Length: 422
Ligand SMILES: Cc1cc2nc3c(=O)[nH]c(=O)nc-3n(C[C@H](O)[C@H](O)[C@H](O)COP(=O)(O)OP(=O)(O)OC[C@H]3O[C@@H](n4cnc5c(N)ncnc54)[C@H](O)[C@@H]3O)c2cc1C
Image (cartoon, rainbow, N blue to C red; front, side):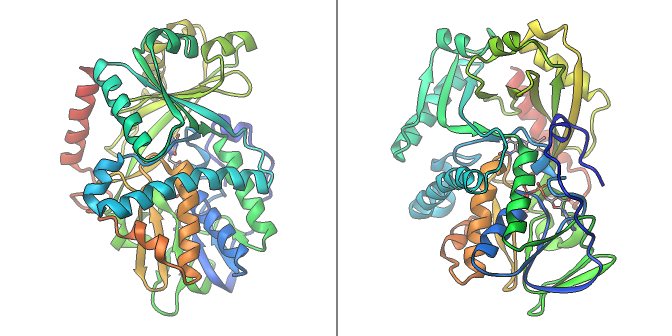
């Protein structure tokens, strides 16, 4: 069992090999999945005095939590106006507050448990087209309407001093969004959970669950009986729980890492070291690494197949923005599955009174997994009010049988890509 090869895996803190589940065990709560969702839920439950077992099919942080762009983004994938249309004014306001709590919570977790994960604040959303600038100004006004005054518009001159590309017309700087080393954050959460008494088993894929009033999770080599189950496998959960599978679609997304540059050259690319994303529908997101590489993410595959020329294709995109990097070799290229929902809101709920789940953060999971873990733990401990705000968000299933290509959706995504290009 290894993490996929990535710059993160090569710069990860050393981590113990955790034992496989062998035989029958019991706990108050059994969590399926050792990414951020599972680990934060475990920390929150253990802090309340409950006994917790986490079953991870591969290694802690093996899934999206160990591979992502590391961007901590304010709010949800959808604006508050749209969310209000689905859940009403009050719940929409509560959801916004919960999304803000997620970022505070992440910072607290890092601080309280001394997690060394290069946490840094400051984030730029960059506009490629006049309509993006209009959209960003509207977004800023919406955030201010919620009392969030941590953003400012950036004009063409200023953005050129923030990012070394002529591609942008301007952007929106958000001092309340940021970045971290995703795998080291996950590994740090696991250590924190274990210090609180959580038992983590790696190499322990759950193949069957019982969600009745006597819940149980079974692997090929053992079982865990518990009072509650939490399904935190997200895009990687597969067919373990068919009733929630169709509500998320695993989409492939990818990152390349250049060879290391001289420090001054790297610093000139993004002088303040902030994380950047553009606002295309298929967005590009990037930052520089601690060891002066350029980490550039983008490209999405909805078809279930990876392009054979991924590395070259992402490199071509990077060079459209940063032609000055043409001489750099690409040392890394990796990808993973991000779980998206139809409405791009996180999907939290109960499969039964004893079985909770959280999935489908739609590209905002670095921050939102923290609050998902907290509200699940609150609900299990008997305070379901805040969990139910999430659970009331309506979710529709994707069309077509799970695991197969979904032609309508793929066509829809192609349409949005075409709009990006135009
Ligand atoms: C390339 C990439 C870039 C991204 N960039 C960003 C970003 O910049 N900002 C952002 O906010 N979000 C980003 N995301 C999304 C973000 O990483 C996820 O939302 C977040 O990590 C979800 O955490 P999780 O714990 O729910 O799922 P995961 O981290 O995927 O963890 C699920 C775990 O469950 C395990 N599992 C699954 N099934 C079983 C089973 N049957 N038995 C036992 N274990 C099981 C898996 O092995 C896995 O380790 C990105 C994702 C990817 C792939």
